[in-house]
Length: 350
Image (cartoon, rainbow, N blue to C red):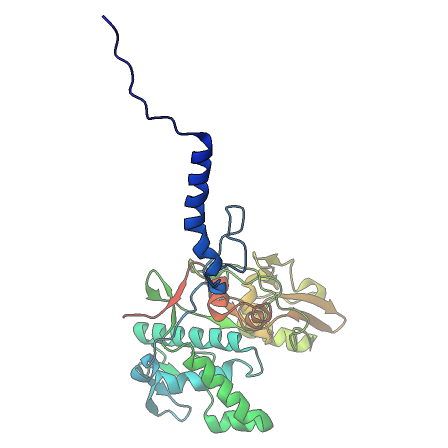
């Protein structure tokens, strides 16, 4: 039996096939020669490939919580003993004007505004035995310094108008923003300047605070009065020591009155013997009115000289350090997160 054969298409002559293909191409391609090119459809740059760097979206700027400062009230203890209720906005203007030079970079001033706002809320929440009738006062040794607009204008002289606007911008641009740790306002302490590194709250005040730990600080010789020298006559040294440490033995020469200092992690004096009595660097600083606890002692014939670097307790944000960081291009949020370890800067719902 004959097998089945596959049915094939009929074979066409080669010339016929070529002619048909040419006509087909002409039908589809001819209209393209009469169309006008649209430049907008042609990319001006090559298409990206996997070897090109991927675009990174910019970090969104931190936005103020508009109206928060105007709606938050504080009881302010004035220097005459009276208490005035004012908005956070008005209070902060006076604090920033008093606490930080208005000539500083704007991002440093914004960082100061957030510090002052946070510190004020922290004080109000915790209360204070020093003035239970008020949330805050204008004494910098207790709370924060404060200037009225008239006092600030007198201090600023010809720059008064410009500086007033600059301080107002620092407050407005950070409206309602606080430093938070675990969702709560921190004890946002600050100081003027240090040498190289901030101090640990545990070493200065004996209390461990997770966000008040040592960090590098970039300020230096550009700080006015960064290095100071205090010299006291031997009799005055004895008098000052006697008031604080009456049991101290000062019978020998001045060279024997002060022992070898123990330094803390930031390089400041942690402890030192005074007339055989153990004293903290903070106590010695207070007794002799030194600008910081980062000092050396040089006894001489009939006198004692203290060589001091920086100004303040050294814990938290350094104000001159903040200005230096602003000069490096850091914004206020980065400055605050630099000095207060582990905090977030945001609005607060408390």
